[in-house]
Length: 314
Image (cartoon, rainbow, N blue to C red; front, side, top):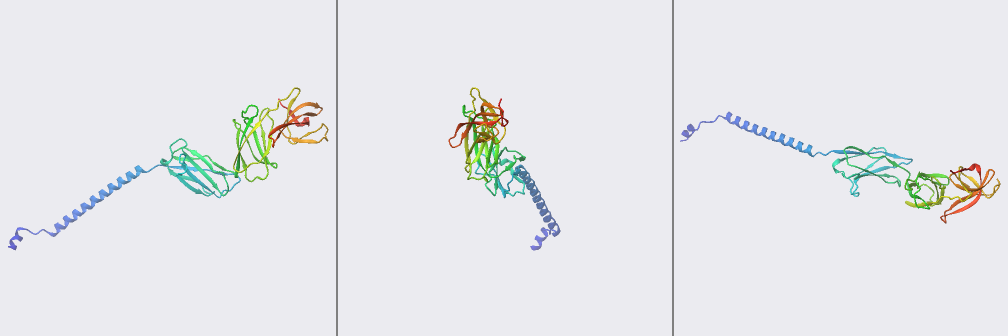
């Protein structure tokens, strides 16, 4: 019986069976590799599609007679100042540069803010607004100055309340210049007064307006932080027989009498106005309007001044 079965089913050669198995395995391996290559290429394609563009934000810092120890630089959306995109510390020897994905920036006009905080003293924090962009965004340079208190000054005409534009402002203390500037078209100017001044003494504020107004001077204290002051300046109106002269020299003596040895009431400086009503050779007699700091009012004083110290105003 067994012999009959063997005769009916002939023997398969072992070599043929092994070849078929190897061929099957090889085809499976090649199929798996093709699938892996396809998946990899699709993954790379998707990755490239999702890859975002970047933007480089750079800033230049110009310290003026100061040496901050470091700078804290922040980028945040204008409408969410408490949620910065990034904040980074830079040392003075390093270039300030931050690279961000451009698609995270605020697309509103000037919707992004860069904040620079100099460290090491009470330096003023500075801000720059900018639009979203690509490539490189160069911010306006940051200038770091000596820590200062602020005086917001407005200069107006006393008669009308209108602004006096382009007035020259000087602030001194014991003869040393602390700061100087000019008012804008609205009569406003923002002045930085160094905190290194003697805070126990007042500063001298001099305002030299253009036109018919005399130089205004007053002494007052500047407190820490932000100060605001409005100055009302009135013009001198000459009466019949009077002429307005302007002082052209600093420390010009204004005397009680015409004699050289007459007592000096006070000294006038360049820009002061004298209303002259009498002439005696090279000596002029007239009145000067003085601003009284404590009373915050004007007062007329009469006296004599040499002709060489004044020039007639047109």
